[in-house]
Image (cartoon, helix red, strand yellow):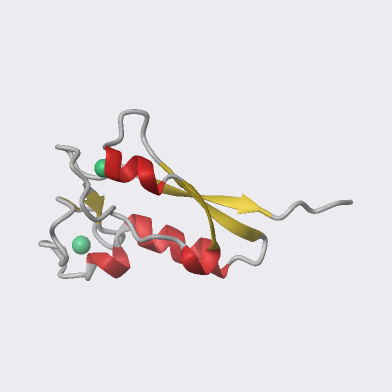
Length: 98
Ligand SMILES: [Zn+2]
Ligand SMILES: [Zn+2]
């Protein structure tokens, strides 16, 4: 399941254009907007791809920490979860010492 960042409409992972506002979900899903914010934030050093506890094998394989410019895109290609891919990104922050 993916959520449009413009109108909050939820659509299945296979949908690429939001049925409500026509936004390109490969660019404007909540997940992708969050990813771009992390990539633009200089305090974020790496990006962790987190998976749900009951994620499918395809998603489990994606679990890990990646350089900002090498993060695999979500939803996971080939995700076999009935409800759709529920993976998400988490920022890994650069430690700032006082
Ligand atoms: Zn929308
Ligand atoms: Zn999956």
